[in-house]
Amino acid sequence: MSTPNAVTAVAGTNIALVKYWGKRDVALNLPATGSLSLTLDRLGTRTTVAFDDGDRDRLVLDGAPASDAATTRVSAFLDRVRARAEIARRALVTSENTVPTASGLASSASGFAALALAATRAAGLAVSPPELSALARVGSGSAARSIFGGFVEMARGARADGSDAVARPMPEGDGWEVRLVVAITASGPKAIGSTAAMTHTMRTSPFYDAWLAAVPGDLAAARDAIAARHLPSLGAVAERSALRMHAAALASDPPIIYWNAATLAAIDCVHTLRARGTSVFFTIDAGPHVKALCRAADADAIAAALRAVPGVTETLIAAPGPGARVVEER
Ligand code: PMV
Image (tube, rainbow, N blue to C red; front, side, top):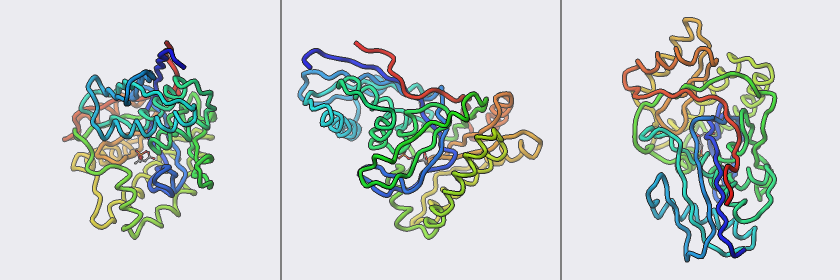
């Protein structure tokens, strides 16, 4: 290829309801367990990849040149695409997170899903959705799930090359009007990145094996709950999966504590609302924010209740969203 070819793709982030925490291979981001998530409409990434005649890859993130560390990570990812396409050209990658600024929600899941799609297309590759999911996974484990929309299950896989550690959409959940209300409880980067935290948990937490043993049962319960569209069952799985993941991390030595005071206050708010009859359940990722799973009709009232919790600075309501897609080709 000699002509510049720019492709823009968008992807929504996803929130795991059955968490992934631990890798069976760090280099390929092969997960130690399966996981199950919901891809969101509002929070995501828009990425343009243009291969050109530059002498190195360049990354512009939210309008500014990215750090060397971020650029190196993207460049290593592009190397895989170049190897597969048998091209040598470098690229200009321009990426914007459609996440409210300072929310602390900028996501590697949507980022690497959008990058995988834009880069493969710009390199002229025809890649099936499972192959794209496996490729996105190498950038970030959770990115494998953002290739698909709605409810998504990620397989642990068994192969050493990761070709079966891919996500699949769960169409049985399509059209279910659920929402995730995100309660922002802090700004700034998280205390410890997920890869380092997972490795540390695996090495030092006496609860790690118990965490691993619990996941298959949680996955089965979540599948059944989605097929039956039974929110209390799905919510119960989501809460226990998040709490078990955090329990394993908390028990590491030294401990990994992602929560702050507002995290606990938001959990208490969700439980109080539930005791009063609202079907609402929380989940928490590798950070202090609380995400509340609920029916669409209850989302506004839940957001208002969470917004009134001391330490909660902002709330967002996200709906199920589509998978990664190309929006422009030049
Ligand atoms: O994909 P990573 O490396 O950002 O790890 C994701 C870890 C959690 O968000 C806490 C859980 C999950 O399954 O998304």
